Amino acid sequence: MIYWEIFLAFFIPGILGYGGGPASIPLVENEVVHRYNWLTVSEFSEVLALGNALPGPIATKMAGYIGYEQAGILGAVVGVFATVAPSLILMIGLMSLLYKFRNSPKVKRMSNYVRPTIALLLGVMAYRFFAVSYEGSGAMQTILLILASYFLLEKWKIHPAYVIGGALVYGALVLS
Image 1 (spheres, rainbow, N blue to C red):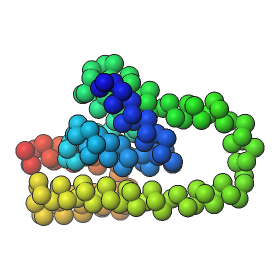
Image 2: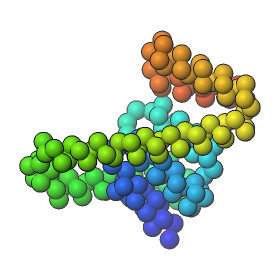
Image 3: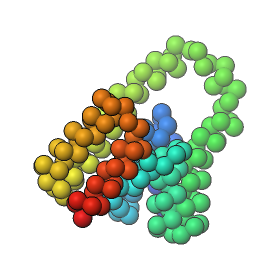
C-alpha cells in the first residue's frame, strides 16, 4: 500500500503541476505534508532546500528522497518514476499534436492564465515556510536570514546553491 501512496503522492502533482518542478512543489507539499503526514512543514522545507542545493530537477530529487525515507530503495524508484511518468506519457502520446499547435495563440494564452495560479501557490508555500521559521527560530534570526539571502542573491549575484549551503551551515552551527 505504501508504494501506491508514494506513486499517487508524486504522480498527481506531476499531472497537475503545469510549468515544471517549481509549479509542482506546492502540490507535492500538500500530498506529503498535509495528506499523508510523512513530513512536517519544517522537514519539507529542509528537503526542498537540500534539493535546491543539488544539481538536477528538484521534483525528482524530492521524490527520490521522500520515497526512500518512506519505503527504502523501491520507494525511491517508485517516487522518481511517478514524478516523470506524466511527462513521459504526454511526450509519447501527444508529441505530434503539441508540435502542430506550439505557436497557437490559444496555447500561449492558456500558459498566461496558469502563471498567476502558480505564483499564488508558491506564495502560499513561502508564507508557510516563513511562519514555521518564525516560530522555530524567532523574528531576529528569520529577518537576518531573509536579508542576508536577499543581498547575496540579488545584490551580489551569489549562486543559490551557495546561499542554501551557507544557510544550512548557519542553521547547524547557530540554531542547533
